[in-house]
Amino acid sequence: MRLAATGMLILMAGLFLLSGRYLDLHPSWGYLHAFAEAAMVGGLADWFAVTALFRRPLGLPIPHTAIIPENKDRIADTMAQFLRENFLTPAVVARRMSGMNIADALGKFLSDPSTGSGSRIRAGAGDLFVEILESLDPDRLGGQVSSGLKTQLEKIDVAPLLGRMASVAIADGRHTPLMESLIRWSGLVLEDNEDLVREMIHQRANGIVRWTGLDERLATSVLDGLYKILAEVLVDPDHPLRDKVQEGLEDLADKLQHDPETQQRVERLKLELLANPALGEWWQGVWERIRGGLIDMVQGKDMAFSGLGGSLNDLGIALRQDQRLQYQVNRFARRTAVGVATRYGDQIVQLVSETVRRWDARTLTDRIEGAVGRDLQFIRINGTLVGGLVGVTIHFLSQWLW
Image (cartoon, rainbow, N blue to C red):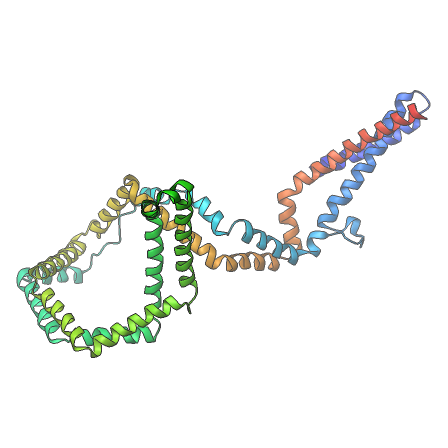
């Protein structure tokens, strides 16, 4: 395209010289001469403008030329800011993610037969491990383990232990992620039950309020207020509600360690749980599944971890067929992406900015020119043609007006 634009400029120069020799022969030569002259001016002007973007025309140190190389760092910052404001905002990410069915794509991947195959265990130690597991009496061993665990747990004062663990966790701030998870969960529950909240407010509003439509505004205000409180508690580590919750946790931890009544309630609950036959049956089932799973894993010489592969395949099928599960997975992915954009958006755009800054001026110029250079050469061609048409128009008006 650069050759085409330059060739057109040379063609106009040739027509200008040719038509200049025959101006006296016929008036039409004057129109051709005017067209060629104005086309050269337009082509040269656009050549200068296009060239000045990427380099200095003819190597001359003309001010305000080589714009891209001279402003490389500013362009990098502008590109990064543009990316941050137009692509990495939560609203844009959420809108783009809403049209993607990530769960279905994941389901197709997991349900692929080649995905479930794992590595193979073919060592003599594996055979020995299988023989040991098969030689054990599952009922007897499971019962012994269950009885031993029950005996040891009965000797442990659970309440003070839980209290000390809670106190240490609170002192180290390790309760904060749990608290934030509960706040996020509360927001999700509120979001999923907005219609129920609105209906409750609507039912409790009197007739005049419903007639004027204020009940809907009241419901919206209540929901907005609740969302605002949850958001403030989530982002403000010094929020008063956080302090109240922490005070409650500290009081519970203190009671677990020093309040005999609370300790007795916890002890009774522990003993009732240990005495429940369902707990022994549950442990027996867990042990047998662990034992059977280990045996199957090691014995699967031709397809080790086939159980895992089958589970992945089942999960993939469920992801493809269960619309509710798809909705949950896609919503989780969308909110995760929004969280990443919100939390790490600045680091992402900083990476873009620093990458462009590290490019040398020639690399940046070549990449931008390679992307838009073809269209810029069309500007030169159009400038040549438009300039010629303007020249013909001016020549026509000058012939008829003067």
